[in-house]
Length: 397
Image (cartoon, rainbow, N blue to C red; front, top):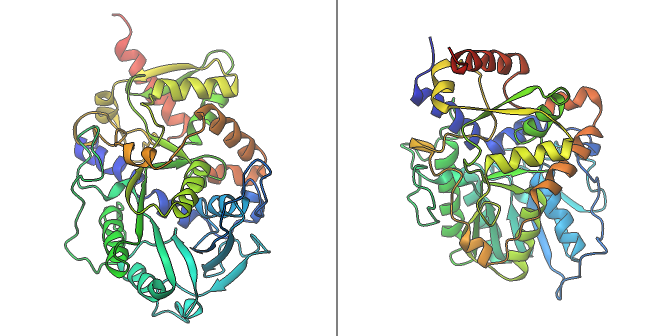
């Protein structure tokens, strides 16, 4: 039995919403070498900030956190990490590390943070409002700014292209629930509640950043990785690669390094408010993304653009084209969120081709047995099945 359209959308949206969580689940203490660099380094191309700051990161050892560390230390700031000490504990040996738990009721909880003073805190690991409320309330007397890394998934609707930060937020029947749900349906509403918890604890001092898909070197989710790797492996002889939708369909992604640098920029400039951290600045299309993948991999793969209605009709459980969402109906606006407010406050983007080249270099430097862990998406065998069905349907006669 084929999935209904609503089930098809639900699976895709669940995969999108669970972005940060998926990275957290997959990050089962991989060695430090699984990221591009294993220690913060003073980037000679980066000017030092006028005023060195003391910054606290709640988390800091997964995908985004290390890039925030890199951006901060290259500007001359001092970083302290607070986490459980379980995910890559050997990462950044020169930084101060405080151990505890985001849940104040577990073990020593947040005790290590008591009476500490920081210029700003960056919360990269807040998923439940009770946890965020506890950390924000505890730190409020000694912190000037609380930067919460939220998600574009906080919005209730995704059907209107060009929506901005004023769009209606998702809600949840039980705001005390501490589970993402079977399809990650609670992820967005809980992130929205986390934003509100931080703002209530530190009114007028919170920066809520709502990224879309975060991509680039070190991406453990494997989602964007799927596309250049599938195109590269299908190159030679002009083999077909299934591309859902049309070349002009929109897509929004942001390089993890651009996001990390902008977070520090927001702190240095005391930027307060709510921001959609989606990229790039101007409209990006799937055709451009996949052409950049072909260029980076020197592939002559043939892109076969397949109608979303066909994929819905013939889809099976587990069919998943990472990051792609139907640009019509319920998800028409998911890849078209307005980022004007963030761009006006200094958010900048490197060329996507550069991101793809650096991503491939990182991936190929991994141990072969680890590479499979960092690629999501439909199998090549299933992709070929769908291509066969599509070609049989569309061939003349």
